[in-house]
Length: 206
Image (cartoon, rainbow, N blue to C red; front, side, top):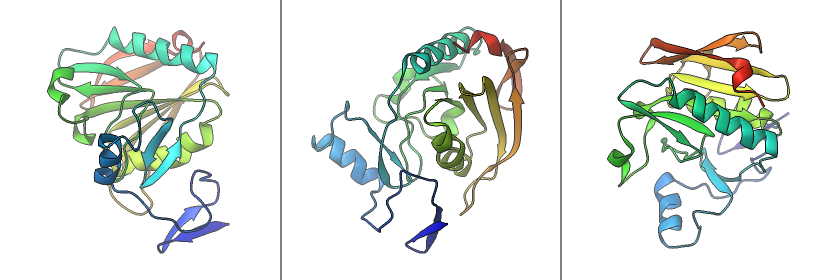
């Protein structure tokens, strides 16, 4: 079953979306709520496709995996990129806070704004309770923004799902390619369409 909101069909398993129409926020309105203190930086929400969505509670394995992925990437990303943990990126109608992101440039370049999709080389979500949201909602948002590589570190099935070749803007945005890597594999780190390193999957699973 699907829900029709503003003539947009939203799958019922996108549990963050209410079953009745409500007012949707723009990124600018979301920023104004933060600026005026209506929302605080520590409030456990993020903007996904115009909806204020509660963040998932992080259990100890999630926290550990986030750190393992961040440290592993910091050891291999080349000059001209840096690794950002759990910080916002600004998309057209969303401001998600991926568990880990690889960003072009230097963090001092983003003192007045958050990185946008053209500056994001890789996003990583650590998935346990959030698996459905990460595989449906966030995957669609990242594909729509044409972020080139999306990893889901799937703690439930102990694998890394790698999504590439985003479709870009559109009603049913998605990645055209998926490959799964298990604990005996090494997952490639690809930036600007070039493999820069490989990371053992067992090294980033807690």
